[in-house]
Length: 196
Length: 253
Image 1 (tube, helix red, strand yellow):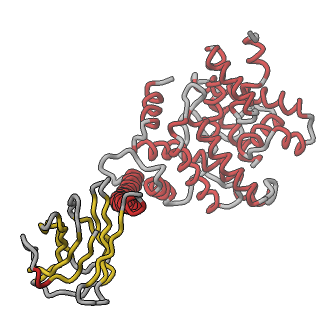
Image 2 (cartoon, helix red, strand yellow):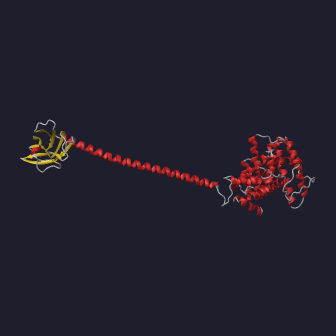
Image 3 (cartoon, one colour):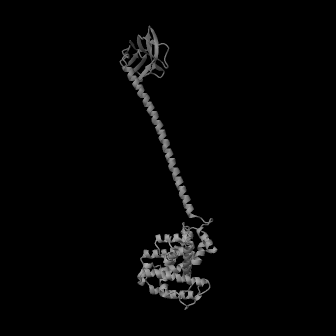
């Protein structure tokens, strides 16, 4: 772990006031992107993002860096807050699929990571079925059983494709972070956006 | 010990990062992470790749969201910042609660102490009353014993002027060497006067004490071998010698 990251963790666990603004600047849009893809409403998604950050802050003493990264922990809180809202409202996750597709077609990528460059139409190193699974599991908060039902695939197949998709993704980012295959990343990005 | 390669190839680590595991399986993976550096490194790579994917697919929240979040956190008691200059409502609430509990406890304790004090006072008064009653009972018992004693003689004194309104009994006991009188009826006297009882012993009037017309039993001085008992009216405080002209009651023994 980098020194910067460790310092961030220390400030977060000691409830340093300035850290929450920093976490929002670094991850707010990413978390909103997850929430917005689960909740089909801008205002509601914003409310849930606020609630998520509040929970993140209230439970800062419960974050254990030995168990995983801070962003993953924040992601889980945000995802669960959104899912719980949906459960309480008994909304269908799959509703208004077309409306979401249209909305996300023109979404801009905000605060681009320097490792990800929007180079559309480049080589696709993720198989379509793998992309699909990652998107449903990570951005739409499907369970593997729900993916299995939605795609009409055996659960075992879903699990296998999940593992392979993440292995491929990992390989892409590792290659990309070593300075190679920048184009591959952008193509994945474009394909995911297209799928949305 | 499970084979590390088996763990890495099983897909369970991917599911862990995606939050798809049961609490039991999550705990199991966390144990692997703690135990095997290779597992920890593998999990971190998965996390980083998904983190980058999320950042790359982020969506800007509506304008003002950041400030709303900061305001929400600063207004929440559980979420208040660790800032010494900021007014901590949780601390204040706790302090106020503690103060109220303290005041309440002080009040209740005070009330309790007052009650105890009152009870103690009542107890003392009751105790005193019991003592008085006990003494009175004892006195009554002694009186009854005296009156019933076989050696106690009641002597009815008679008026020498045929005053039927004067009625007095002397109770005399030579064994107990005790004398008492019981006034049944006597006229009220001036404030400067008193009744006085005498015992005639060989022609000499011996003083047995003064009394008034109160109808309770009164213990008098004991005199041996009285030949008669006599009552005169004397100046307030009694006399050394009887005023014969004011003799009102008499009776030989």
